[in-house]
Amino acid sequence: MLRRRTPQTSKKHVQTTLQNSVPRDTVLSCMAIAFTPVDIEARKTAEFSSGDTVRVWSKIEDKGKYRLQAFEGIVLARKHGTGPSATFTVRKVSNSVGVERIFPLYSPMIDKIEITKKAKTRRSKLYYIREKAAKEIRRKMKRIPMSKIVGATDEDEVAAPAAEAAV
Image (cartoon, rainbow, N blue to C red):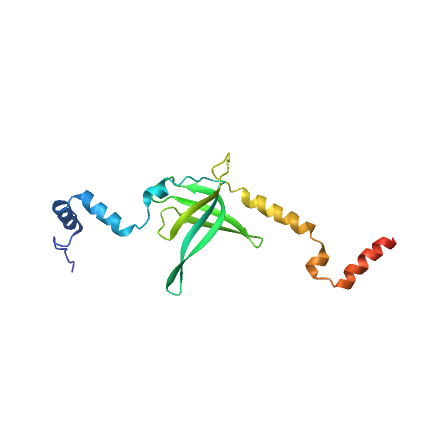
């Protein structure tokens, strides 16, 4: 047996009730105030682009409390302009490991965005930096002598220069 919706609970009835009772602009402005604790105009005019070094202070929930944690790195990309779905990608190298985070520009979990360095780049997306950083790390790894990696004893290090001098 099919049940038919009553007109009082239908979606169209709710929409027409809202339109007739309160002006639409008033409803939207009340909703914006209630759900967005972010200063939208300040974020919209954030003057950073790809290549800049930024420090993003994000709110982290820790044992029921919120604390601020900084994530500082190079902006690889900004996407989706200044619209509500705008994001930016930040990359940093921590303990020889590259870490990237994608932040929504208007996220309420971001406390503030500090610009530490400005840079002029010719590209809007700097994804090639990923490979460039990896190559630099590989070069540094090649330069490290094996004795330091393996953990040679002091006797081996003293004996090696003496053997080279004798030759």
